[in-house]
Amino acid sequence: MIMEKIKVDLGQRSYEIEVGCGNLFQTNFTKFNASKIAVITDSNVRGLFAEKLLELIKSQGVNAQLFEVPAGEKSKNPMQVIEIAREMVRNNFDTKSMVVAVGGGVVGDLAAFIASVYKRGIKVVHVPTTLIAQVDSSIGGKTGVDLPEGKNLVGTFYQPSKVIIDVGVLKTLPAAELKNGLAEAIKYGMSQDEELFEFLEQNVGNASPEFFLKLVSWCCSIKARVVERDERESELRKVLNYGHTVGHAIEAAELYEIAHGAAVGIGMNYEARIAVLLGVLKEADLRRQNELIEKTGLQAKYSAKTDLIELMKRDKKNKLDKIFFVLPNAVGSVKTENGKIAFPVEEETIRKALEQ
Ligand code: GLY
Image (tube, rainbow, N blue to C red):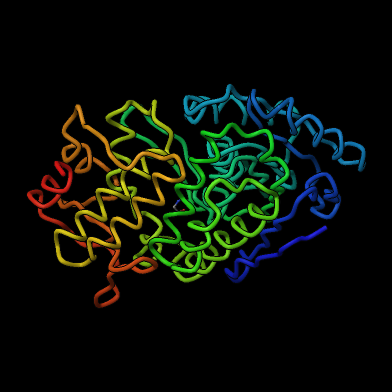
């Protein structure tokens, strides 16, 4: 079995990302020395992988219990945290217990948040089962839940003890979900790695395990290096937000009925357009980016029904009414100046880009 191991070097909080195919059900859970394991999953993933994983853990002599939340973003809420934490208390989960998050981004963010606050913090292991969670959300320690006022407004930075990625599980993933993950992969390529961008150009439509093994390992390595240098997003980690300033506004405008990756695909188009208007990026590079986005089956264009600029101002990442952008200056790199990676852009320029 081919297996990549990528280390995230964060001193005492270092951990390993394991990327393989067929590796998940070979995992030895006794090595975590947990007194009890809470397998947290959702209603979609329960029957696909989580129940089988629970049985594997139990067969290794480890006490374990399954917690299921309804599939979808609505489960990422503080009441769900309280409900699961209370259930864990009633079932004697203690400070040596561990959470295993089995699912996509919603389950990962919610379960890791619970682990970060339960009895002041217990271990968490991520088992991401969607492409977007494998290339992005399971890495780097961001956890959180949503409030009625916005997404991810309550959360922590809390690194997992391990991330176990099995690309074999992607076989059951709907095409729309794969595209969702590919948007984040394009983000890494466009903002940081032209070779990755070329690999994506050459492999549009490839859905083989070999392709996903290479792609997921590549994206995880890029993210690991960023997180190692700027865990808490003082500046460098903002590079991972390329496409997300406009993307988050689109998600809010669509009342979160649009997939995150779909919104990021559109966001990259308009953010690259801003870079072109500012003379930072060549028109030809914008076209190359958008060709890849569209070939992947994602949309680059969007017609807004709401004022996206007002929504961008409300985003927690923007300060003092200024809207910040990561600006690509070529395929594979972004503008940096005096250690800065995100730059405020005038409303007029943003508006012009959005109208193009
Ligand atoms: N998804 C962006 C980050 O983890 O920083």
